[in-house]
Image (cartoon, rainbow, N blue to C red; front, top):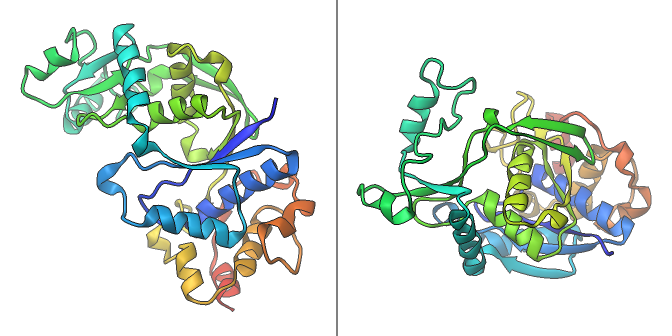
Length: 312
């Protein structure tokens, strides 16, 4: 069976060096192993989606020399398939309506003995309403949550190794927002199953998403489609925090505007992947030098020296 992975940028912002490194590693592994690649634009977060960011992301990927075999597919055009999955989870009692505001969740989770983890939903609305319409009769918007329970989910991460996650530490999670928009956890499960994705590579900031998504695969009877997961350490700033605006402008578009070549950016990304090679023009130049076992297992720190290298 052909293995399939996906590049899935979100147009809530521009691609930066951290995104680019993850996408590059994903692409190099796929092309080295003969996998297929799907391009998916994860644009469901309407208020945060920036106009033109999808086009910019596609241009940035092409600028680096990253290609794909299928897509781009837009999540915003696939709402009916998510609605069908939500209806199924409601019908089987594995999802329930929740009228709690974010503030109420925070207050409940921080109450004495309410939870061992701040911010974990304490199950206030579990069993409160017998339907979504019933919940809306209170005159408050109703989101949908998945009843995760207190089980422990185990999986073998292809990069980090065996992992166990007690769901009591994460709580029941949102699968549809109060405005009806499918949430990330549900949408990616439905999409990955529909698109035949066998391998998901992403930053380790999404490690907690994996047990949630595995539970959704089981709830939707999609167990045979559970992919292999690869979680990579992030690129961080000198302060040890995830690379963001506070560390300056690290957008690929910014470097393009400064006249930095794709080869220059790829040279830095290559070093962050354990590759030392000269004469890089496109991502394809790295294929013969790429090995997953050389990927650092600690976060990458973006330094002033790295910035000077790019602009030098």
